[in-house]
Amino acid sequence: MGKEEHKMENNGHKRRVRYKGTHPRTYEEKYKEHQPEKYADTVAKVISKGSTPAGMHISIMVQEILDFLQIQPGQKGLDATLGYGGHTRRMLEQLQGSGHMFALDVDPIEIVKTKERLQYAGFGEEILTILQENFANLDRVAEKYGPFDFMMADLGVSSMQIDNPKRGFSYKTEGPLDLRLNPEKGQSGAERLRSLGRDEIAGMLVENADEPYAGEIAEEIIRSYRRGMQIETTTQFKEAIERALAFLPENREKKDIVKKTCQRCFQALRIDVNSEFEVLQAFLEHLPDALSPGGRVAILTFHSGEDRLVKKAFARFYKEGIFSEISKDVIRPSAQECAQNGRARSTKMRWAVRAD
Image (tube, rainbow, N blue to C red; front, side):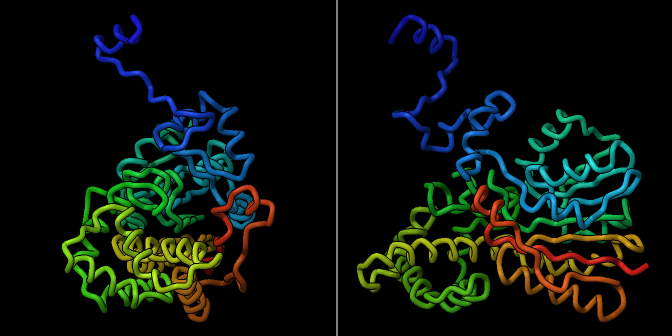
């Protein structure tokens, strides 16, 4: 150890972990991507390659949302899913310093970072109010702060949550099988999985992700528990899925099948852990009363279960005369956006206008 390194160790300071080779691999090693203000060139390079920098989230269909919402200075708006704050920031810019935005998020970790990020960009409490609140409680929020002239909800999990191995959202990195949007409340993914029986696991996989191998996977999970094996981490869950699919013939297609099955299973467990369908249903029920006459709402969904709920609710409110207009078909991101941001590919947007 050199003198400088020894001196730093003695002073209680640790050197940043440097990555081996030419490119950072782990979440912690990508320290430049976590600091876009300081390392803008590095972040720009990552984005230009169609990837999302670690610790960041690239907002999807921003222009399509703005074109529909038609935000005017002086209006009052709500971002029901704050996340990284990209959509919120662009909506705030449309207000041109006049009016007010409200934003909700349940994640106690990311909400603090996003608030600081938006304050740094010049959007303080005089024009932006951020609340740690589940958007299922839209009725309570609207009663106190509404009604709103424009509203949006992005139902996807943010990239900074997916990429952080400590949150357990991805099968690609080792971490605790947590999957909670708010890690301070409720059961973790590991706890929830352990509490379910075979038929309940299979039902969850089918209902939340249309998983074709739900029966085999549920059987393997229960078999693993009986053998005394643990499923406490993302890797252990992935390995259980791989064991369940061991009967598939070894060919080129198997790797892709296993990958997509892992994606569906993690999605299904995440939806279950966070009661995402129930939360969305509550939000949709409260939506009409939260909008001003003529108010506009845009919702981004990322899988068929969410889209069905939104489509059904919008159609019902339109039929009842509560909404004067709804999108007849889903709106998709452009091919260019999908090429630049792979996570945009499954996005669907639906919109509605509150009757006067």
